[in-house]
Length: 72
Image (cartoon, rainbow, N blue to C red; front, side, top):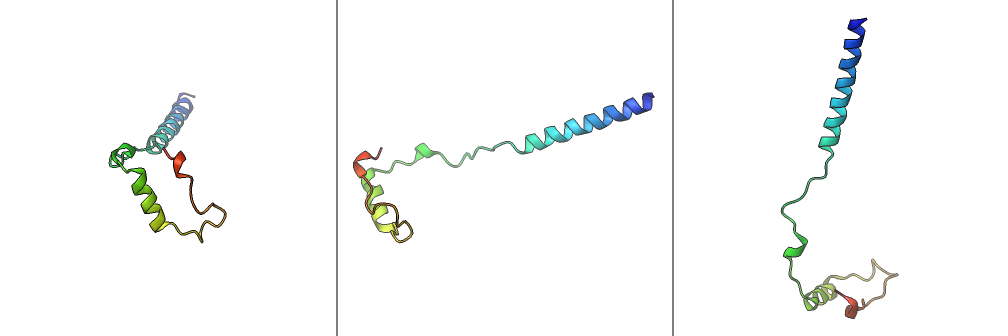
């Protein structure tokens, strides 16, 4: 009887250890290299880059010119 209890406790322990290991490995890691506040791009630079690189054929249902006065 004690051997069965010990075996069951060992199985439950291994199960909890496996679950905790799985959850620990699935944590979202932060990327230290990227900081969204590190880029200081003006609206004029954004408009220029947009006008150069925007391909309107891929976005047929979007208006051709964005409303730049509402950009923040």
